[in-house]
Image (cartoon, rainbow, N blue to C red):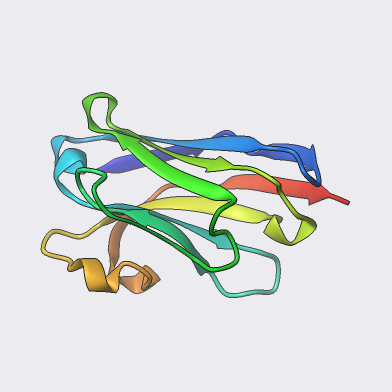
Length: 126
């Protein structure tokens, strides 16, 4: 599976952005995926995850209510709708796909993911 993240940019606090993750490979529709982010000087952190059919989602407390993860298996794509953005949301955002057999309980662990996109920069000015 190859992943291409896009949709980042420079916005003001309170604005919205939608990130997209385009996937190649038939395996995408049968595994869960997640979004992580990494700010300068910080560890990569979990943002959101969605299971293979969209029936389960999970969010970091810092983005709950403000962000929505979704997927379109027919188009091999996933999305992260971000609203009410804050300066502390500034980071490079990465999409990633579960490895085969990965359990939902591991969704917040970056090292459990098999494939990663290249990242898209989101900068929120105050």
